[in-house]
Amino acid sequence: MKKIILLLFVMIGMSFSLHAEESWLKAYKMAIHMKDQDTGKWHDWSEWKPCDVDVKIDFNNDIVVVYSEKIQTYRITETIDQFDDKKGGTQIKFKIVDQDNDRGEMRFRKEKDGVLQIYVDFADVTWVYCLRGE
Image 1 (cartoon, rainbow, N blue to C red):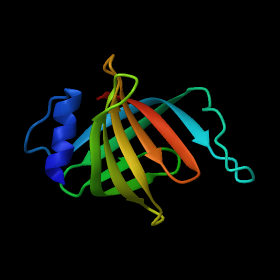
Image 2: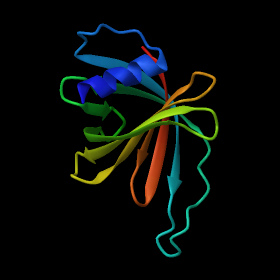
Image 3: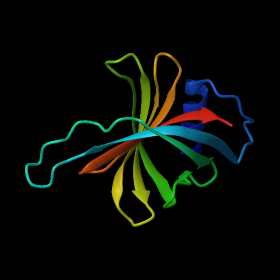
């Protein structure tokens, strides 16, 4: 799996040492997309909200930690796919397990203008962080 995460950083054009144990990014805005529990339909995405959140990617253990108010820890368990999306971005999708043992997916996305995003997808909610290197 470590090879796949290293591929991710090559894809997004970030520089790092091949022997790096971890990499730090900064989330500067986020949005959320929720499913209505009564109707099963997705609401519109929220407006972008500014944030100042550290994100650590631990290459040795295939773990992503988001240091938001409630710390989010995601263990990458499997690589699903790497693809170009309809909006001109490039994505790598992984299966994840979070700190509560909930299963979902995580997508690392690089927009065509170079903005890096991390999407966290569960059955009833998705959130996205826009990131920059530290």
